[in-house]
Image 1 (spheres, rainbow, N blue to C red):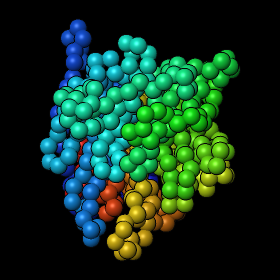
Image 2 (cartoon, one colour):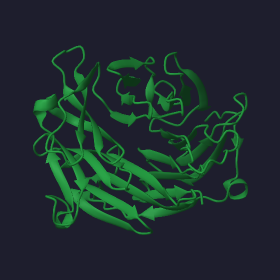
Image 3 (cartoon, rainbow, N blue to C red):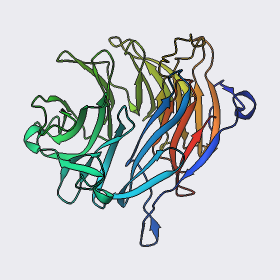
Image 4 (cartoon, rainbow, N blue to C red):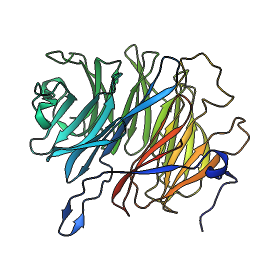
Length: 380
């Protein structure tokens, strides 16, 4: 029987307003009568838009996913616009720039090469419908031959940072992680490359550039490893025995949610960037396929003092033991239990992404294998 923590179960309809669940049009291919499910090869990006007074006016959302073929679906307004992007595309990573335009890295299985793609004016690109995307091969002379996975982020509108996994010549550390950079629209890539070697092949990786100038990485392999690269020096805070996601605080300190490999518990881990992790168990059994995403509300520009606890982490997670998507809110006082509520029933979710706007309202993107649809759950 599943063991539950003494959490406070919040009835969303009464306490915060009901969750609104929206189906996102999804292209699912079938092989021998069986659907090609969207598993780990899904990535999303979210950016809210605001007026001069700080009021939310809309949102940009981009989702890249593979169901036999690589697809991209976008929201810029009220509707969704999907396209079949690359029949041989795999392992996408996607990000939105300050204008809400998507940038993506992905691996092409037909030639074993890594690509960077971005939207451009219609007719000026070399891929996508009506030449609306520009795709370019990332030269292997910079970093070596890619194995497959990559991760992308962007600073402002013009500097792209991509993590790429390549084979290492050291048999004790078979994977090498390289960070390469480029100014958007420039003819070539920057010459400097930052590298890390790890002992096991990657399952996933994430990259963020914090306002302090540090490059933060989370590598999911044999262990969960967090690193921060600043002024040419790489530092980490010990490995965690699990798989998960990360965010950072206003002081750029890491906050991690993860499922531990031993007992399938959902754990929240925090560090001050130099000392080992302090951990809290949120759920004692989220099953062997459980996954999570963590977010912290971004700072507002309106100068209004937010309520106490506003910038505490929130965690969305898939409870594989109960086939449910759940949402957990950190309490104001550390000695109090987290608030946990059920968002929706779901089956077979492999990837889940959580985003918060400046008002702290959550948006959760996930795939429901039972309905074969991508879902967007929002708190109005």
